[in-house]
Amino acid sequence: MTTRTYLWQLLRYKPAVWLLTILAFMTLYGLNFAPPLIVRALFDDLTGDAPLSIGAWALGLLLFGSAVARQAAYCALIGGQVLYLHLVSGLVRSNLFEQILQRPGAQAVPYSAGEAVSRFRDDVNMVGSFLGSAFNLIGLSVFVILAVVTMVRTSLLLTLVAFVPLLLISLAINQSSKWIIRFREANQTATGSVTGLLGEIFGAVQAIKVADAEDSVIAHLQTVNERRRQAAVRDRLMGEFFSALGGNLGDIGTALILLLMGQAMAGGAFTVGDFALFTYVMPFVAGNVGSDSCTWTAPDPDPASPGTPGGGGTTI
Image (cartoon, rainbow, N blue to C red):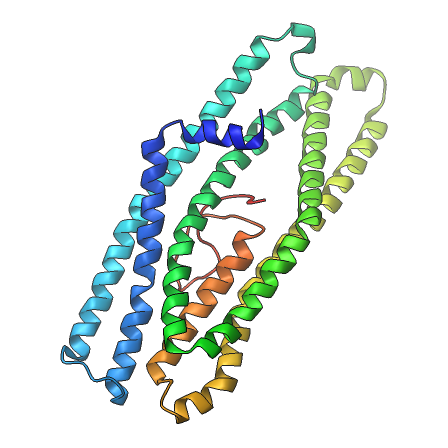
């Protein structure tokens, strides 16, 4: 079975749940674009660049209403996402057990019992992690499209300058994908080796004592653990590097806008509200580009804490 067919079969399982998750992601990210629009209108109203008849109090109420709506969408997202991830993980584990029981007893599992536990625990979780990241990407695209359209209508030059760093990080991640995959696979393999060895040690405690092999077994365990440590450090370092780089690119984009906006503001083509919108959007988009490219953590699609939307694992 190819990967594409495998994922399609998973999507056919409980489609209503993952459709609810995608809808909640899209709604949440769409509502996340309301605050920058309201903040821009508020600053433009205060500076007199675009006075509004509704006034600052009405804008404040709109801001509060958007926050309440985002929290409602967030609760729906958590419910649908967690439910679907558990359903998918349970389905995959159930199918794995069924396939193992159908094989000859002597060849049921080609690994040790401890390593099999690691496969059932970590590798199965990666399936749900990938699907969760895909759903998050669909929702994030709504925010990015709204942001790009609004920013281009405000200033095409500043939009291009602001998004050039994001394009560079995306290209760097794509070029480094082979390294990321290799480090992630090495980490998973090393983890399985340690888990398998621990299972064998606990299952043969009496034999180890009889053979007086405690020192050699402990030395071997330390060697395997050291390999796992090195693999985990490489994997984590690569993920943290791109995550930090993506998070800092928002600040770089803001700095570039500061350098170029003086002339635009002098000509009346760029207002204080426009600057507030740009600086509000850039860290959020940049943080998500960096973090979702390498790792996937618990959902937090909030511009106040960019870089951790979605919910749990690897997106490669």
